[in-house]
Length: 593
Ligand code: C2E
Ligand code: MG
Ligand code: MG
Image (cartoon, rainbow, N blue to C red):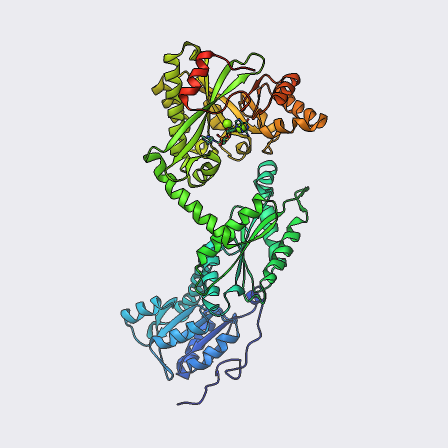
């Protein structure tokens, strides 16, 4: 075996001495560092001359006769391009190429070969070389161009690879790269799974900021969030953006589980500091869910899902930070079961509607009936919508279910109208979820249902919860189109969302249903009465009819009358009941008040 060869054309003077590391921008003005691996010193001099032709003094060539020595150099220093002979004393054919790639996967490689062989050339490119030149045909022009193109190709290849793995807005790793790193981390933790934790983080008021101050400010907020996250995590942690205002942090090598909590606390306080963007002082805050790997070979996606669910719980309870626990997992499993069964509920005809009257408080007259959904579950009995509508909304099942509700309610109204003269002026109210409103073609579905059942549009009222108002960007257009049809529109559960008066005013609502919590707290005294009066004032100012929800006793009823509330709904007046029972009430025309 030949002794280690020293580079013979220019510095470095021995194969192992590293060239000093250079910052890329400084390197731009400096001669470009090139490496030649070639065992013929004669051809090496020729290459040097050709490069001189192409680049003048703008390059610096280190020459090695052995791949082994070039590898050592590449591991230590940044090189712009490697020129590689394919037949070398310590590597035959593509072996040398593979060794160079293993030493530096990112360095562009131009093969200089003695063989004019298409097959070998193709294989070299497939194995990661950027170009293949035949020695006999090479000249300064061709070689210079090959080097320049190789560098450029590699650069754009790298940029594309970076793009595919990073979020464009923040330049953080994206979901794909995060998943990859998490899988690697999990594979490494055979013995102590809990040394890996995943933090799922969601900003608390991002939507509000984005909607009120615009996307420019929203984008900057996300970028600044990314910076703050980078500042508080440990250097070995991976911060990624999952899209929207969701971020993930991967913590590895945790000595104790509480370390992850400490990181979460640091994130929490970093994000609690106000953001100064575009002249605004913005307070956001975040909810964070933490999940630890529990066992070796834990599935990365499961871990992310657990952290996500946990974050959701932190958000729901406004606790800031929550840890994943098994019980939650069980409830998730139960949820999944509900989800699966709900799929079949429609087909198996397990859904029912009950109807609850809305009453004119001074006369007891029934002005409308609200259709309320029930699920007659084969094992668990009659289920309230609160137990399954959220699942239906998340899975999108609410769309076919909502269509069914609309159709059933309109048909029922048509039956009542046919059988009961008093029902001619009756309105049927149907709850619609934001998912339905966002559904393309929703307005057409409503129009078609009305036409099919012969119900005039003004006899139908659609109820949208206040929390949905301002959540869907397209809501305005859909509501306007419904209004155009002459369908009545109602804001449900007013007081539980955070809509601004401006937001409410910009939509074409007719009715404001004041949430039952406001009715229930009337008994607490003057302050509560004043708050209720203010809600009535809001309704009046916006030109809406106020409806009090959840009236449960005679005191509440009396107070509401005194406050000037005209319409109400609640167990004290009439409970939700199946169509037949409600039909009897409608025929009577009024309830006792
Ligand atoms: P909501 O639209 O606000 O409906 C009123 C709820 O208050 C109904 O609960 C009703 O039974 C209940 N309620 C009426 N009077 C009283 C009272 O005096 N005291 C108390 N404590 N409660 C009273 P329900 O039927 O369990 O429905 C719950 C929610 O589920 C509804 O609230 C609505 O948001 C949603 N929902 C019901 N049906 C549908 C539907 O078909 N589609 C959609 N998307 N959501 C529905
Ligand atoms: Mg409602
Ligand atoms: Mg309500």
